[in-house]
Length: 357
Image (cartoon, rainbow, N blue to C red; front, side):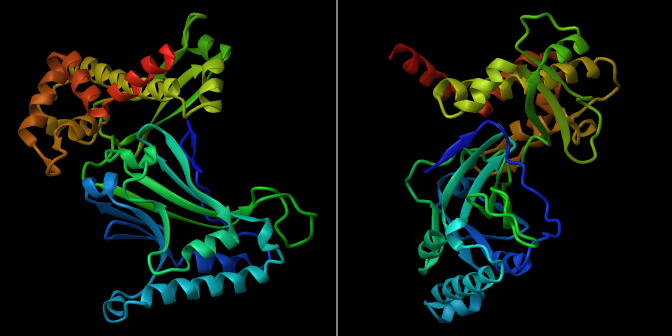
């Protein structure tokens, strides 16, 4: 069963959990890894994979095993998975939490369109049973419908696994009791050479207070507020996009519908359009002369994505300079390039089909 959400999953950092036995559970969970085709992504690590593998290859959860062992023993992976199951059972006993009250969740998320999907969900027993073989737990099978976060090679994908309480328990000192409390978690980051846009945006409520703050008329349903688009940025930048409360509520309740998906693409187009036109205005007031002058800016990151050939994953400097020229002279042309990169056509056509039924 797969659930989609409008917002990017907000994985917790790992503070010390104040519950009995959870450090042992976490240690076991740290032995999990994700595979995308032949690429292995370990807990708390980031791995760059081929973009073709990213959108086509099966995704599995396995336990770490030495590569040399796998070469000489075809059952090494199965043995490692079985040992993981044994260690997990043992560590869970020390938490005093019944395994039937625990849930395992694998969540895939991307900052590209702020999509998040639960790609696998089950009890601890179901998790251990699915893992107890030589290929591990199949999160995404070859040829099966692919979760949307794994359809966005420009943004990459984070896969998080959580072991959490399914239901509330009687409160006891030193024991997890609140529904949803996680006992252990692990995160693996999958990226491609196409990279991302270098900034994030999370839809927020467009309240009357926000309208008043920005001097917006009552009928406004969305507003974008972003920092400089051509100045160098040190680390990720955040762009604020505010969406009418009622519309945002509907999107959050039914984010998997064709209309919602189309609107989410439109949000992404609106954000990048705002960045490009702000960059166009700022360029007219600057002495920047080439792409290299804005390479690490918001616009620079957008141009980098457009100037990278998806077929061979190669960056084309001459194309980047041409796109810089368009940013300065014809920003509408650059917006068209960006829209092609987002490729919203299929999502838009679905809304027409949905509306005619």
